[in-house]
Image (cartoon, rainbow, N blue to C red; front, side):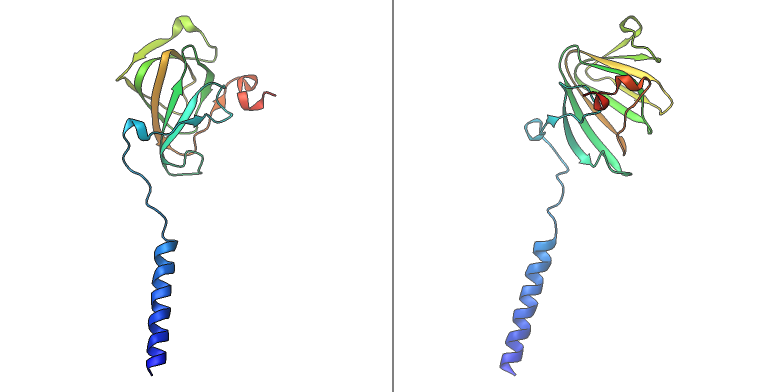
Length: 158
């Protein structure tokens, strides 16, 4: 009887250890500036920007996401749309945004740090950084850029 009690206790202890080990570490839900980890932006954006994922999976088929995009001065994104609403907050620098199917710097509006804008899926728009600029984008996955002119899609360039 003592042997079976010992075996039961051992089995229970091992089961609990496996259960706790199998539980994933909870996702970080708060960040100080030094905890935001940037890496290269995805291929659907022009080279030169860096991206950090703060929440969710922006490439998933559904779900919430929050990302930050760090752009150098003069960085441009050609006219495009998104399948879902894009909510943008300018954290630093100035983001210039224009509407339409052709990139025209003379028709862009400037949004300084602290500005917020949302763009619905049907809005054809383009953007440019004036000075080093960081924006935060949140919305529903997936993050996708539908370039008005397919030749502007950097992921298709060799």
